[in-house]
Image (cartoon, rainbow, N blue to C red; front, top):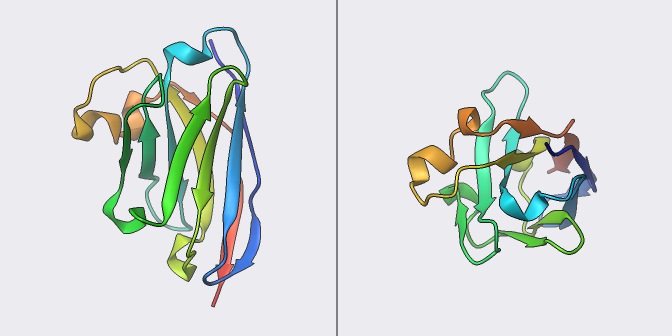
Length: 128
């Protein structure tokens, strides 16, 4: 099992940057692929970014490509989401999630139903 705790959210002006962190407990962190999802008020939880167990493969939703970067350090049991060029539409609660799925099928790795472990979320608010 793995427990996840996010941090780093906050209020930022449009065009600004934030770096979210997700600290994982457990000695099996490196066996999980990790992802970030977000949920805005009144909307479904949506996929943002995914990174495989080694950090060698990443995927992003089109709306954040070129602005967000997901990374991980298995020695530190941590995954990050660097967010640059933030827009008001990025405002949401951001969740870190872990899955045992090791494939590269985008439809699967971007589905929230594939992830069995979730953090409590961290609020990101982007003002215009």
